Image (cartoon, rainbow, N blue to C red; front, side, top):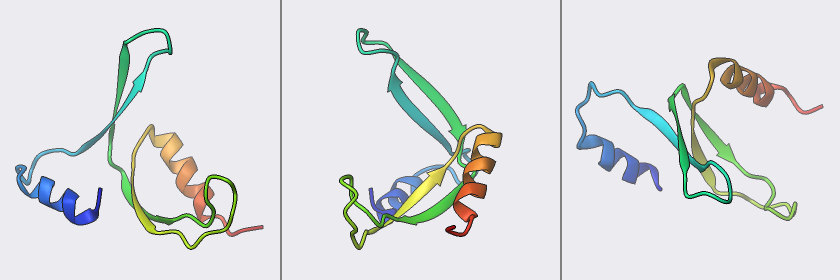
Length: 86
């Protein structure tokens, strides 16, 4: 999804509505059951990959991450990505 597409979708919603991130995942491989984890969006993070899935260096396209989760996990994640490379 592109930023302009998200803006278009959200522009049709009430401006005071809460925004959450819903993560849908299968419960296990043998069942049709799913689980839904709901999180507030705690932040927005511009991200640019420097390698592809095979580890080869690439000039990645800018991606915008909507960041949410358990507060402690989000804080640990944000702290970890702010650390300068060793």
